[in-house]
Figure (cartoon, rainbow, N blue to C red):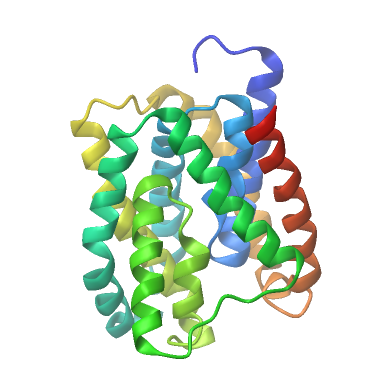
Length: 243
């Protein structure tokens, strides 16, 4: 991170604006829609995940700091009980598996999301056992890469009132990241602290715009938005995997 070219720093700043926008606009997906782009700049998830994680802690605490009464604590407790062990297993995999494997894993998961968005396929569950499967998968993917949000949202969207969904998800992300980051710190992963001085304002810009457009992004207009995002993710994944 300290010896990158100018174009790389510019690209990183723009990507963090984008992640802030998606995170606050949709309530999820900042990492899922930002990490694949960041891997095109530097293909090592251990560089980016601490930065994304710190940002998520900062902005989620700002967003729901005074809205804890709008959180579905019953669902949150259930989800955490199911996800805690898979999340820790995912973190272990992140630290021990070869970097190339983890990069391809991230692109593979993102490719799945891309096709879902492009063809308007909504991941959904109609039974509690499949809810558990999705939460376990979402916990593992979140532990390994922080991009498990779409899997978790597939469960929470029909278990949590729409008015409480975003705040509930923000608290869930906060807790999951609070579990993950200390493990990374204990393992000696560099958190690149001084880079937060210029990346936080970039993410803040996107965060503010996302808050203003939140209502529109979760309305019917979101389908077209997701289709465009899906097509872009498809190009990003193929670029990252084959070039």
